[in-house]
Length: 262
Image 1 (spheres, one colour):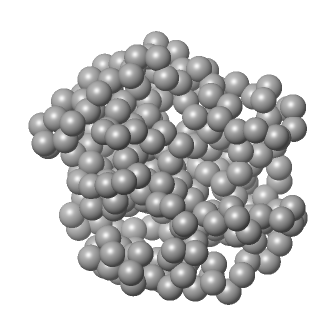
Image 2 (cartoon, rainbow, N blue to C red):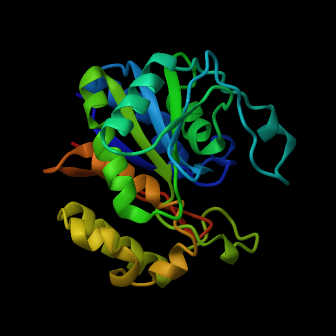
């Protein structure tokens, strides 16, 4: 059975730059397949698809959504036309409805950069079926943990569940600094608190991170980039073992941590 995974997807430029995080993601596909086998499909909960109620995309082939502005031309030339997974999308819909959650199926949407940017590094051949499930930014961590728990049975069927967001995400502090700029002490303090809470399985603390973690509101002025963590946690199970797969930072403000939940 595959673990569920939380990834920090970072800047859209990550596939085109050299950084510890891009090197990690470039080896992630091999790591997953060596340990757990090739996924039948990959289900991504991305911070960049926000809807009022859960939605899942069901398409034959995914279009590449360039949902950003002002970046160099080569980034817009990247394409990740992975096949979709309409059958798995129907399963996602049925699992969420059975758990008492509303769900709609979107038969047109492709992959936003929260999905394709890490996947173009991890599985560059784009030959594994990919689908996305949206986040509901107004509903908070507990809702997303419940959503993830509803998706848990998919792991037994070979589906890799990925939450794609960012360990820290205060873009207001970006001033053109280099990608290897040192991170601030508040970034470190928040990251260390979250890491310890995850490793120790302190679920109540994590669900209430906004009140308990140092500098939480500063690191996440809005919550959408941390909510995929709770999807991955919920999909991981009730008695999970958290494995820290990667830790680094980019631009001094974006922690790029990644975890597997077994």
